[in-house]
Amino acid sequence: MNSKISVRKCEEYDLNKIINLISDIYSKTGGPEVHGKKVLLKPNILSENDPEKCVSTHPVVVEAMIRFLQSKGATVFVGDSPAIHTQRFRGEKCGIRQVVELTGAIWVDFLLDPVEKKIRNHDVRIASIVDKVDLIISLPKFKTHELMYFTGAVKNTFGLLPGFSKAKQHALFSDRNRFGKFLVDLNEAITPDYFLMDGIMGMEGPGPGTKGYPINIGLLFGSTNPLAMDLIATRVAGYDPLAIPTSKIALVRKIWLKSEDDITYDGPEINSLIKTDFKRIPIKTNNNISVQFIKKRIPFLRKFERRPFFIHDKCTGCHKCVNICPMRAIEPDQSNRTRIVLTDNRCIRCFCCAEVCTDDAIDIRVKIFGV
Image (cartoon, rainbow, N blue to C red; front, side, top):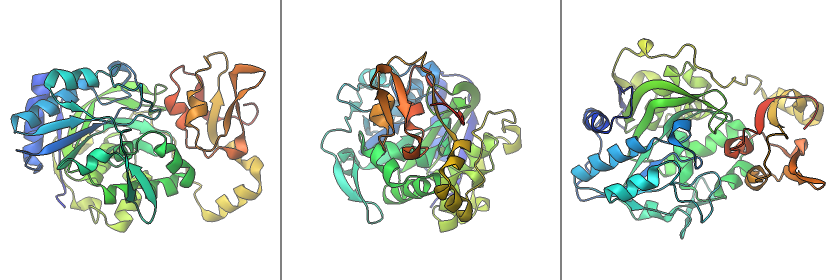
């Protein structure tokens, strides 16, 4: 696989400038021929929030990629499945649906007629559009992620699973390492043909939802290689790239790259781009098997892990956290429906609840006492 990645500085969401940068990046990294092809654009739409929140791929980046592909003779489809995906989802608040309609691209509802695919001997529901297009182009957002530390090219493919199929995978692969292996398996089975990461404005701190903080990164990243993209992007964020579970797993398996040294980098000197003050998710270092064995037999030790903590005064009782929880560890208090109760021994620390909360009512932190 092509191991080249191009990075270009871009400080603002200027449509014409971004189109020109995409043209340059796409050419330098050997993007696939799209003339006469049906192309699915898969942005990152975690939830319906204003673009300024930096929760989703910015609509100007989506529009720029649509117009670039259309200028090359492609028929463009656009779609994603957010964390809470119901039939009411339109992709409008994030501005992407309006861009689709403005450009004459075709919006795709991932909930319609999903198909079953075998992912490492495991049946997974996938949006049926993947079998109806010639190419898939992924548009991840530069963001932190409470579970996987960073959400980039490999993680963005997870949105091809429609609706609550995603929560099911969290239940089946209930820790950081197992979930990382599943994400790599998924990308092996369905590898998008190109990746363009929106790092003009990114997210730091407790991402990937509205608890994170917008930050100017000022970069666009492009590659046909998801691992090359994630290794470079996480280095810019100040992470040790091998601390990211998906990257480490893929490198051990020698998928996409045999080593980081195989990357052909095209862009400004990498050390000049590193955000030394970037607010990262703390890396959990106690993944030793014996430590995990002891924790399972002494449940109290789980109290010293970072976990969801509910701020009841901010809760509006929308119950998104209740609906998304794959283990049914979150329930409304029967005496007060706006008060949420966590059954800690059921919680798998996937942090989906914090991702979908739009009321700033869930923190992820160590909390030995209380719910």
